[in-house]
Amino acid sequence: MKLNFLQDRKIPLAWLLLTRQPLRLLVAIAGICFAGILMFMQLGFRDGLFDASVTVHKLFDADLVLVSPRSMSSISMSGFPRRRLVQAMAHKDVIGTTPVNWNFLLWRNPQTLSTRAILALGFEPGSPLLIDPNFGEKAQSLKNSGRVLFDDLSRQEFGPVSEWFSEGRIVETEVAGKRVRVAGLVSLGPSFGADGNLITSRETFLKLLPSTPPGSIEIGLVRLSAEADHAKVLRSLSASLPNDVKVLTRQEFIDFEKNYWRTSTSIGFIFTLGAAMGFVVGCVIVYQILYSDVSDHLAEYATLMAMGYRLRTLFGVVAREGIFLAVLGYVPAYLSGQALYALVRSSTKLPVAMDPQRTFLVFFLILFMCMASASVAMRRLVDADPADIF
Image (cartoon, rainbow, N blue to C red; front, top):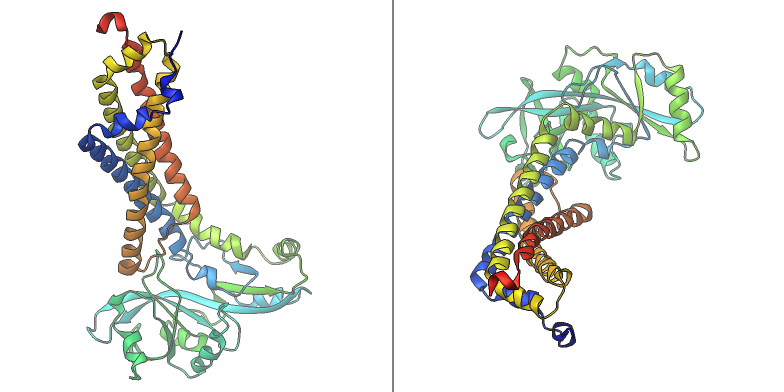
């Protein structure tokens, strides 16, 4: 008659086997933790860079966005006639538009006098631009020529502009070789294509970049009435406007930028490959630990088989070891990931943060990694023949 003392007495055999050699357990946890951190960082960098590429896009006050079909991304925007916005206003559901100039100019650090490319946005100060309710008041200062709003989240290489302005100092510098004065601060944040941002009026923008035709813009923001069907208006404008302009929803405009970095560059592939390498490294580490554990206790497993336990029951013991390792390795990996994300945010200003989707993804990857390694290590149990061992 088969003995069921493991089940009857609830002996945590899997846990006892793991903790029998604490040093080996710590090495296993450290290996799984390292693999988890690597996956967290690679996936975090990938998603963070994609999100960073649309930092400004997300802040635009618009339902539809007009761009040139020749525009590839935020770092390669082409112009189109401003009159397309006037034509769009003829639609009954369009309640407002904002023409926006978009280009990179050279900013001179007012402290070190070094220059660095900065993204400059030009618009009509009386028109809505950002969803920030306080932005309209700040934009009034741009009616004076030569005034700009500086992004206080820009990288430090642009100089201590925010600190000086907050102290009440007059902050003047050069943009594209022309004198400008900082009239206020905004919070936009750097993107993958731009380390910093400034906003000014179209009048000032055209003075800073006189090669821009006065009737040309890079982005057209379109706002619709509350009851408007966005998809229907988009189809109507796409059909009525000439083919020198493309109409996108706000989300399509965001996806348009993300897709460029995802498909036209190697960023997505590189970071996804890095996460895959972390997964493979973790599989190797867990397999070595579980295989060694099974080999060391092969006599004990053979004894249980001689007592009448089925091989499936012993497989369950190894599987539980894999689950314990997954949980014990994931917790420090998660905490370390949070700390490293905070370090990256403070150092680079990139929006790298732990989100629920990535949290569960990495956990299931670690769990699958441990269970897959346990499944391979279980093959060693097939050799646990009591007749051969004793």
